[in-house]
Amino acid sequence: MPSPTPPSAASRAARSVSVAPDPRDTLANERTLLAWIRTALALIAGGLAISQLARSGSAALALVSSLALIGFGALISLVGYRHWKRNDEALRLGRALEPSMLPGFLIQGIGWFALAAAILAVLRVTS
Image 1 (cartoon, one colour):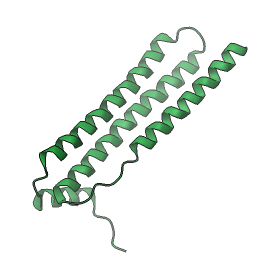
Image 2 (cartoon, one colour; image 1 turned 180 degrees about the horizontal axis):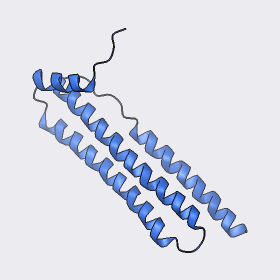
Image 3 (tube, rainbow, N blue to C red; image 1 turned 90 degrees about the vertical axis):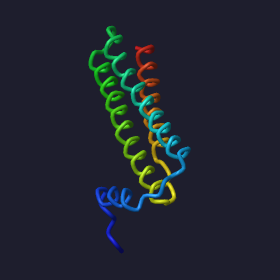
Image 4 (cartoon, rainbow, N blue to C red; image 1 turned 135 degrees about the vertical axis):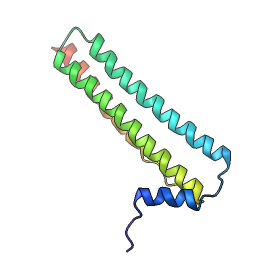
């Protein structure tokens, strides 16, 4: 089995054998990256809001929640950039685009955070 091409070699190959992709595809890829950036910024802003607005209650819980959202937002932005770069290279090399793991990753992260928030809300009301 051949070893995978390092990213730097793939980037060089994309520049040297590059075909001009349809501008609509390139712009759609950029819009998708911008959507992931907006999502990441919203998660980071939510984490900052929790850290500033959660004056009542547990300071440790507010810190953990805010750091989780900020970290998740940072991770989404990095993975979104990697996905954009991979798609850009595929478009320029005329290859098929790989499916994205980002939507499932985001849905799972938000689902776990919502479940934890619901459990904490119930515990707070019942105590």
